Image 1: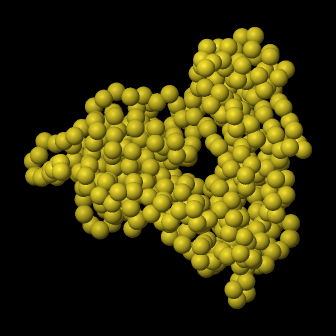
Image 2: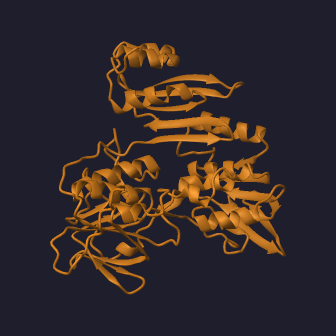
Image 3: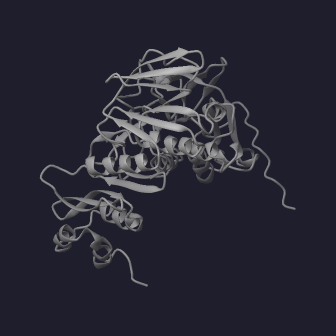
Length: 431
């Protein structure tokens, strides 16, 4: 039997590089593992403020419908995974970052020094300032602790109102609906998933939800929540009232930035980073939901809270922290949503660009939709419903900045020729 590599003994005055990572979600874990592969001798500390092992928030819906247990949400299944990699795990909350002293202060009073720091603190749910939001029956769905509360409160036949029908809200809705409650969705936007889908697609998803027994109110706001015993009365801005057992708040998320107050690290809506994921402070990096990175294709800074993006940013940050060279091509919008069996996607600049063209194919009866957005003869964005066979092709054409030439007009005439255009431009071989 092969012997396990002994852990390093970290004596004071050691010249090993000290890497500290704040946040043990997918970005933090991938960064720690990438650092270990790139620098076998470095000291790596991974800080998380929840009691559970590192887990994926995107797995919580599967937990709620019983497809996995809590252990199924864990990012790494072996209990000794991080020990074997000699990654030190710390359960605490970071209260402050001192970039001059190169240290972070924890809520348990301890201070950790670093040579290079990665901030991967993710996001937290937004709780709108509505009377009654602090009542016991008003729940969020973001942590494993939240999931336990929802599992206890939402049963078959429960009356549930969910605030928010954005991307995260629809993922939560799917998990809730499969538990068998009487479910109502309230979205302040004029359509479902307004930051992912255009008016036609958002309306189609709403019709699908209505067909599946989920009532949806768009263009509406919750004004108040009042408790009468165990019953919650929810009043909307048009006066409509609902008596429910549970309210789920899924009205969006914001980056976790509180610990950076006064640090000198530049922030706007999120932490500003360059193409190497470095902040304005040397040796301080950021990755994931907390970053405001440059967007692919536009050059604008944007928040793009999706897990694949977070993981790629973490990989790039870690390689640079380890002294290697890696650059980001820009944060890329790529969302895939399963809404009660209806698959929808958004890619790149799906809203279109000034002066750009569109191609559209609509099948209302069969819930099919394909809309392509062009800038000149380049495909820059897309929305789809039902056309799952085109996802890889669409992403390849957009991220490859492919000049379509004559194929642009062919696609305007027939968007379903997208695969033929992909092959014709030499991006794949026909087997």
